[in-house]
Length: 529
Image (cartoon, rainbow, N blue to C red; front, side):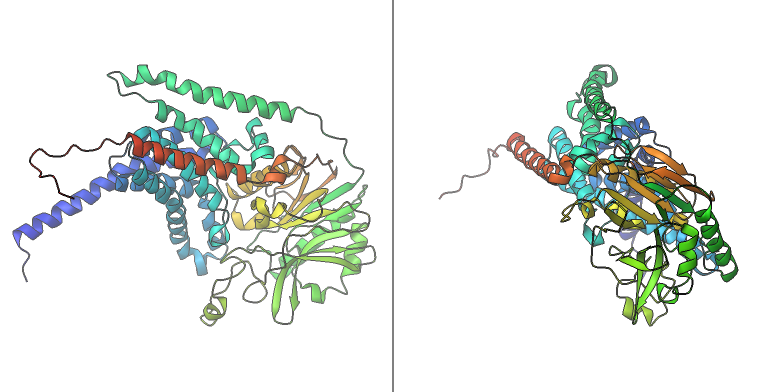
């Protein structure tokens, strides 16, 4: 049936409208990408603040909720695409098999993350018609969204808005508020110019003073962070650590010839002269199962010359685990911890039994089709060592796992294999989040990474010693001492979540109160009761 002229005109007009909407979101995508510059490894937080301020100003003044949704989607897409582009790296380990998936993974991940911005902004636009109340609502809903992202769909609290402060004195505020408090502070500081903006003939000159409250807020928290940072830490403990980094590249890690070389590196570096009370190897440090390690374990123990902690895979019947194992002198296994917060599609596949029949398995699970989750967070007590909480790779990005333990550990130990994340931004962002865990808990964190970045981090989140990315070597250092339990350990993120909810409710109530009621038409008859 031929297309009628009216239908053709409507189709053309609809296509033009869609193109205009997409073009209007390009500035938002750019602003989201610029905001991501504030994250590690660049950490240019002033650019991030400016980009976020402009983005919030645009979203708060969208004339329709649908447009606010598109602007939030564009800003979120730019933020997540630039901050988490390392997500393509696992697909490039075996590019002939998985390389074609890399662009789809990046686009889908960025769009999925962008929904955590777009949907809250749409809700704010629907509930709060005025620019000022909508600005307050946007601060509240984006804070709640960053918090929710750590829990929903197994959680992915990576690239939170507040992470732009890691490495600055303001990061110390996390000892009181946690990472979500940093997000709330960032959003308030960047939203104040939008809330105070005045519609005048010369908007730039008349609205420059609107920036001053933001600068004052940042200065206050910068000073508070510096005051905490300059407080002296207790003297280091007597425990001497040796952290070994073999630099086993992921595409060679399981090759039989190369894996023998990497294993020899671990032995040689562990056996080098020097005092050590414990030797630590990274996640999945060896290419054999714990079940098959009885003959080689004594040689590993002799090379360490001290208790040895390392990552290894193990099997129980048909189940496989990503584990941390402690070994005493002589090679006897004294404790085992199984990773419990597994990476979706990396270490296990949702609906794995069904997909296994199609030959689809997890990237990081070298044994079996995927790992089985352990029982949960724990504190390990090993003879001769202060009690510690083990964290395997991905688990260190979840602050909630560090609260609610029966006994408080004296240090945190993260073993990881960041070779999956490439060499650009992923490993640096992972290290930055480990620093934040130390601040939140007031505990030192020791990090053993396969290809880097291995580090000893004190209770203020400062790096005492580190091995750079791609380096073969070891760290010999004393274990820093712990601080008293922080306010965040006691209260968690609850005060910030309550604050955001109260701000949202207040914005909705004020918005409804200030909304003018349309006058009744003179010609409209009055209804009788």
